[in-house]
Structures are given as structure tokens and as C-alpha cells.
Image 1 (tube, rainbow, N blue to C red):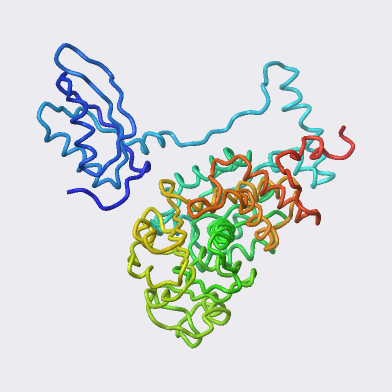
Image 2 (image 1 turned 90 degrees about the vertical axis):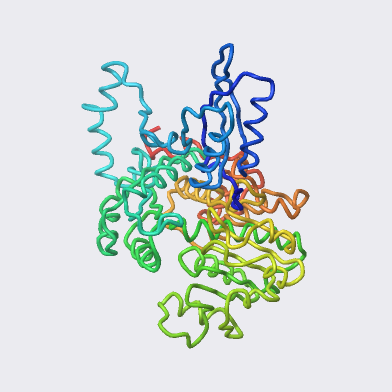
Length: 486
């Protein structure tokens, strides 16, 4: 049986196989894998003798069960001996994904004396006399804490701090790779709001910013709000603001493609948690025509019982007609669907009932709210959160540049104006001449994105227009040096 789910590099396996040495043996292996619904990405000959060839066959599968199915179908082939199966994702995580490297060599007594005692004492006293110098004389100037309590990890739910570590390590690696920002996982063995706020406040002196990650709603809203009041460094909840920035950037360009204006469209958002709430607030700030917010309890509307404070606010500021039906009914005639919720909530037939030239952002991972292949039969523009589909909406487009910009100018907080500026910067990287239904947002590997976002953030803080060529105006070491040192 072939899987109907999409294969992904996240479920890539390498299978070591001994196969009889005849002219068609390798072809039979790849055919077998293809018939099982997997995608062969590499095939390497490891060894051979007069009768057998040993190969490492690497393929993308849809999930663990599908990987087992692929291996089973190979084992059932005549002349095939499966010797070992390696999960490439687990191999990548062995020993963790990040490490600490010293920026100074410490090759002799001279360097040791300046990096540590006695020379370091002078730097300590300089900071004691002027605490602001900690931003420039310590790692604080370029370091972010990635803080999580493990209560809402990806789509896995409340799996705890230890299980959250691989995600937080990955986030730290992305910070470094895309923004040159040193980030470190801080996972907390508590889900008490007061304790989390107290702990983050206590560790804040070592960091130039706090990135809250995978903390469940509605606690995440209170934690962020309280920390913003307490700290003089930016506090940024990426599940909220990073997602909202990227969605607004993609929607800006999608509307350009279909020739519609934000103030004229009706948007349906599935998922009124952290991400959905932030998306809707940013769209409202930009003047969207109308929004219907949908969650497990139904469409949020005035008079709906048992609503949280956040849902009450959304009900009062969205859904002009007080629609109270189901999700398929909500998207009838809608211009835009944005999903940040759960897989397989809609069908292609549902998408067909949307307005002409509709836009579908189905962002649940790994399986979106609607099969993108079905959605593309009816919608003019389709985006997902998947890296193997066109128009991937990924937070890595936003948070490295946002923090890069905030750290560069020692920002004391993150603002809505920064979010809007970052979204404009991301959208504009694509360029009007490059826009089309399958290119509404830049690639996460587009090297122009982080400089553009960082420049936009710096411009907001400084109150000046963003430079037209941000990559040519990076912050220098001398710009960050304390007064009187050089």
C-alpha cells in the first residue's frame, strides 16, 4: 500500500543493502522504493565482490510507519538482503546540534592575562561603574536566550522541557546560521507563570534578548507581557510575532499577485492560539477588511460562552456578521484562508467554494489543514509550512533578522512597528518583477533577507527610513565599542 502523505526529508532513512550483482539489480531497488511511495535521494555503492553489490540507498518517507513499509517491501524482494536501516534525523541529533567555541585563542600567558585574571578585573569594574557597557563588553551584545517550558512544542503538545531541547537547539542553530546571533536553549522544568517570569528576569543580565518558544496559550501572552514590563531587553515570542510577520509578508505579495487589496478581503483564520492571535492582530493593524477566527469550539463571535480574555478581544474586533457555523461554511466566499491549527480540516471541494482568485495558507506541520495538491486545483495562490512545497512560510525568514537588528542598536523592546517593518522588508525582497503564484515569499536561504529585516528594525529604532541596500550598511565593531575605549 502506497502512502497518501507527502514524503519529507524529516523522515529520511539510509538503508544498507546487499543485492545480487546483475545489470538490473540497482534499478529494481529504486523501482521498489518508488512503488512504495518514497523518494530516492541518493544511492551509493559501498562495496562489491564477484556476486554481490553493497549499496546505501537514501530515501525520503512520509513518517516512521511508511519507512517501515519501504524497508519491508525491499526485504520481500528476491536477492535483496537489508543489513541496516539508519534514521538520518536521529543521526543528526546524536550529541546535540550546537556547541560553544571560544572567540579568543588563549595560546600563551599574555592572552590568558587579558582574557582572564588579572586583566579581566578592569573590565568587570568598568561594567560595575557603567552597567550599560555589559551590552558591548560581554556576550550580552550578541546573545539571546531561547526559553521554553515544553508546553506546546511544534504540534506535539505538552511534552516537557527535556523533550523540547532538540527544538530549542535547532532554534539556536538557526539564529547563528541566518543571523550571526549566539543563542542558547533555556528549558525550564516548570509551567507556573510566576516562576517562569521570575527565572527569566533573574537570568536576563547575561542576554541581549529573550526569545520565548513553544509556551502554550494563553499563558504565553501573560508571560510575554509581564517580562516586557520588567526587562530592558527585547522579549519576542516567535510563535506569535515571527509567524505573524511572515504571514503578513507572504499575504502582501499574494494579494499583489491576485490584484486584491487587504482592506477589501475577508480572511478566515483556523487556530486562535498564540500564532493565530498574533496574525489576526497584525492584519487588523494593517486594516484588513474582515476576519473570522475559528478554533476547536467554533467560530469566535459575540456572545459566545466561556471565552478567554484573548478570545473575547478577538470576538469584539472580528467577525462583523457574527458567523457561528463550521469551518467549511466560514470559508464560503472568503478571499483568504490561513491555517495555523491541525491537519486535514478541509478538502479541495471546500476550497472550491472560496471567492475567485482565492489565497490559501495551510501552515499546520507536517500535515497542512488541506492537501496543497488539492488546494492548488481551486486557489490562485497556495502556501504551506513545508520545505518540499512552493511558497514555504517559515519563521526563519523573520526572527534572525529581527534579533540581529535589535541587538545591533541595543533595543530595549520589540514593537508592532518593528513587526510591520520586518514584514515589508521580507515581502520586498522578492521584487515585483519576480512575483508569481509560486513565488510570493523569498527562500529561507536567500542571503538578502536577514540584512533587509535587520536594516528595517534598526531604522524603526533610529526613526529613519530603511536603507535601499541594507546588505551594504552592516553594523561595525567600532559602532558597538564603549565610549573612551578606542
